[in-house]
Length: 532
Image (tube, rainbow, N blue to C red; front, side, top):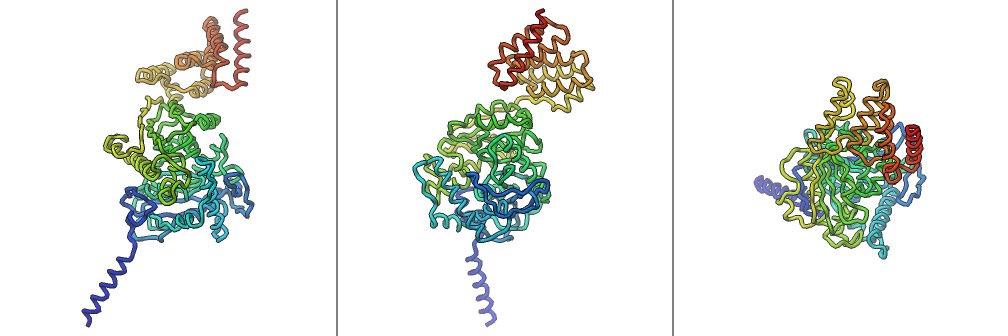
């Protein structure tokens, strides 16, 4: 009798275990064929405030404000974190849980009203993204389609116990976090990355502003979020990367320019490689392209505004380019996978969006593993590319030899004199860098020398000899070369530079209209005085 009970209990246990869903990728269609890593994935959301700023209301994509009560505790941040976790811990989730969080960006309380609002927001945004590709089809997701997505099991588990150790951090800003980038975040976390998503906001509402100021505000948001992540014991803050889509890629570029902490940057179908967003970035006094020295992966597809040529000036970064000819910008978000469940969810594509999305994610992981974890090999080697027919073009632009930073160059002047600055310049040229110092460098170094270091203008004149050697077609450089030559009473040299400055002024695209007017006035006055 006891033996019978024993076997019955064992059989019952086996039946129970057989009915339990194990965390293998086969049980999660939302992950497609992505090769998941060794880790179970945990998920948590931090609701926090920046007490140094005011609270802001929620704004939809059209700019409509929803003046529901907002906290007086400060600027609101919803920070979503995926991380390597211990197996069999945490609570199972559905994709509905990610969509529900869309309704808690500024008002953190959870309610049925907010869930309804979040789901309608998802429907509206999905329709708007579809209309970008298909202006004739105004259909929204119907209830059955929405429920199909809401009911999908997700790989991550809520509040799972973190795995032992510290892991590299990938921060992924997106305006509809976490519903749009969750698959990528779970995939990276399963391979040993703490992946962080948040929605950059504007000055006065939750909607990010498409302007130079908007980029600067978003960078401030990003750095605040990183500060909160740094408090996590499993986050390795010495290995931080940025992954960004659409205009958030320019937020990433601005952040990398300002902060050397970032070790890798991925522009995932980002507008960073467009003339428009380059203009936004260049409008910021904080943005210095020469400070971008971290490896960059550009994943891009056909678009009239997108061209790799707009990143050719980032010469101190190793740049890797992969062109996906049959994918679009937002198919690189979760929608690329959702097309498998709801065909043409954001419009028809000539290629397979699921395979394109999976290929892009594998390439992202490969890039991070090589740049962050030090794995050997070439990013686009034959073994990887042979089965990835979603990509038709790849190329690499290696970085040029980098100059020392400004602090080192100032210290070099004091310890070794200006001769050492000229030596550094010539050494970099001999190593293949035709313009060793940036235009911004000459302005900053000139102004630094002006304060009690160069009373007879000798060093500034020599500085602009170097500048002219690199930028002979710059009206501004010619003007200052003339000005400092005149100060040293090298009048014939000054005349030549002033004349060149005036002849180049009108066509110099680096000068604004007011700058051209000012330069013409000063150069003409100085030249006339020399001709008397």
